[in-house]
Image (cartoon, rainbow, N blue to C red):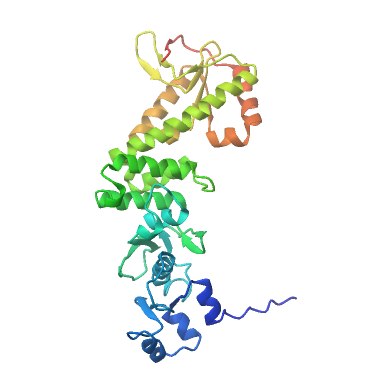
Length: 343
């Protein structure tokens, strides 16, 4: 049996270097620094200063924006899952997006308030420029410049919630819609940021922001762009797979005029339809029920419906091609004659 000898905790100097000179009272106490020494060092003209309750900066002068972020995170993480450690909190909202380097938000020096997510059961109050945000979900963190930040989609949702509550922060200009559109687009397009449209939709729906008309308009625009790119890719691949060119977004109705559905792609002669990421269009149960209704009506009338996702098409184009060719080979089953209107 092998034993792993635990490594000793970092010294005060090592910890200060790691946390950019920001230290909590419990970390100082664990390293043998008496409270009276801390109090003395933080007096006017002393070498240290108190930034937040039980959080100190081991230097004089104005703290840097990064040191303010460290102070907010360490303040919120105190008495978390592990005393003095920062796993019990993550930076979110505009501050997190600034750390990620988003161009659609003010640069880090201009960010004043810092939103920090903590578990709902934590007893903490806002302090200084730190705003405590509670969540019932398990905290997930991404390390950004050594700081624990919420995943991009969650940070975006919290930032938008903050802007909507404040009537859009003054530094973002007069119009909310351009700022919302810019931050959503940057979340999925910025190099090095791994955030999918699906993750954004989930977070915005969970937070209730998808019901806001400004957010919904920006989200619909993003979804339309994403779906158009996927459908264009599917059309090009269909040509490679030697399939006839499908109709894009046709309206299907019964001979009497009864509405059936608007599939993303449709081969009338084969009776085959393709639905791409259909659940992403739906940010309410009513919309989801409407889309499902159309899909069920197509299947009931004999149309073979193939359900695809953009992510799977990108990851497994050959598998998707094989599935689509097989569906086209089999075709629909006793398809009812329909009126097909191209858009």
